[in-house]
Length: 137
Image (cartoon, rainbow, N blue to C red; front, side, top):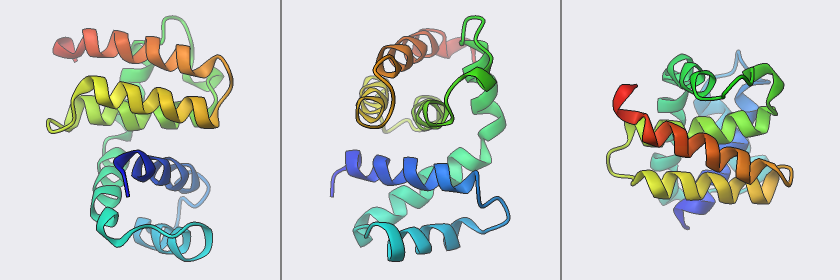
């Protein structure tokens, strides 16, 4: 399975964590894997690691998104777009093994597949500003 597919799983599971706040991540992944869509066993460590990192750094990710949103409140953004941004911003800020351009491109592809027509451009612009200002974060 590709990392692109793994990121799609991450997006779906991350979205579910917002509605299952009392449930352990391990349990959410297991339920998703058994009832929604089967995850390739070799991708589970990547998916789990990304999700744990995103959830552990949610406050920093949210603050970064808000900082670069140019007069947009995060509350005005679609939850899906915020989750896509969280995945990419996490990879940009915390994953040295993932090039920034790859993180941005994957986020744009997720937006094309799952969000509105304007979302890919919005997400690309946001990530461009964040990557450009990365040294200051």
